[in-house]
Image (cartoon, rainbow, N blue to C red; front, side, top):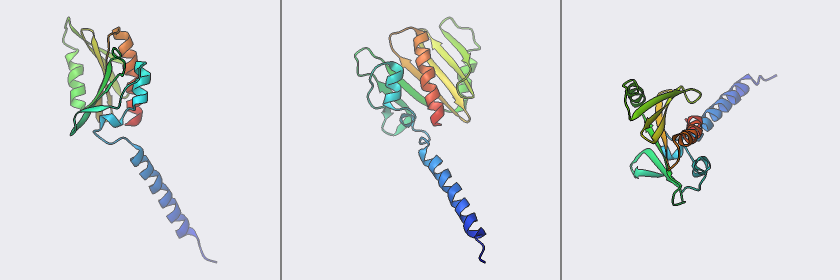
Length: 160
């Protein structure tokens, strides 16, 4: 009788390789901020329809902005950073300031904090060797912006 062990081994290798390729191809492209959130996700967080994400320039893809289609709906930016920028921002919070505050939060990525300057706030998150800032710019209370930023940050972390 012929043995099917070589065939079975090949089948297992092909299965694992295919699974790995699917995982790699479904991940967001590294350095492409617009690929990490969809307009539907951003619109749901803002509570208003948004257009497609746009880059600062066609060749710089580490920052993406989604603008509300409503006149006063605001906009969202996602900026990919290195971990050094994350750490630097966190250290800024160690310096007492009347206009700036850093508030650590848990449950998002490996480490995260809100960086508030006046009535503007951004959520800065570290996940592995990647960091990003998500910010909601709208005329609303800081707490409301923070909640929206946290929702979006969870979605970005899931795509990393």
